[in-house]
Image 1 (tube, one colour):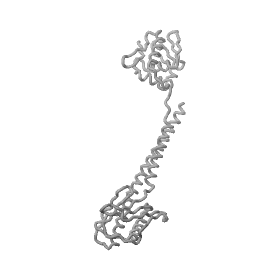
Image 2: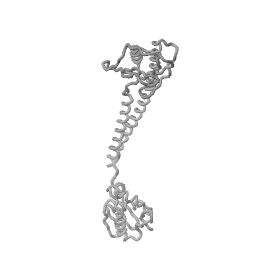
Image 3: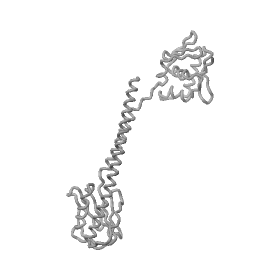
Image 4: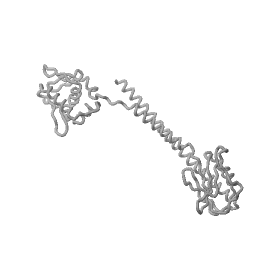
Length: 295
């Protein structure tokens, strides 16, 4: 039994050690992904500003400003301009493709050119990593001078999703490990520690291992429950033992605690201890019981 408990303890320590290492790895990976995401986002905004700059130059405007890039959703950005301009769809498609080719995560995206006045789509197209899936229309039709905003929506990368799966998977493994290696609750905590002990109090010799009470020349045989109950009292003579503790330690593992069961076994033990006037189990009102032993 001690060997199996020692082995279980080593297994549990081994599991917790690996869980600690995995936790540190996850934290490090999380910070790594966070740093990469921040860098990628900053780089992307620079590329989007360059797209806006080239569009203004193509329309003949070299003085007005590209306004700060807005991140309007997790994977959606908006390019806005200080002044109205016109654009050629062919040039817009080539410009976005040329600059976004420098973003390794921008393989698939949708571009929508919106009218500032009413947010209707003046022009739009979709670019995919698989060129056969590109959707580009209305090339060669120059758009009139107007106030436009350009929204670019990128297909989500797998980093965040995979990281979420990693965290979820590790949590699941940790939960399983805790469930399977959680030490089993001993069914008889008193019996395990007291079975090999011999108690002496008053005129009583209590052999917990043999389940026997010897009072003077009389020997009383105890049941398993009586032995476990008396072992608790004999381990702490003249000390109050809470009723709830007695019920918990004696009956909890059997699944059902019957309120009067404790009183019945206390009564049986009292009867068997009657031969020794120095020993008695007394009730302490509102608290519990104690084995009262007088000198």
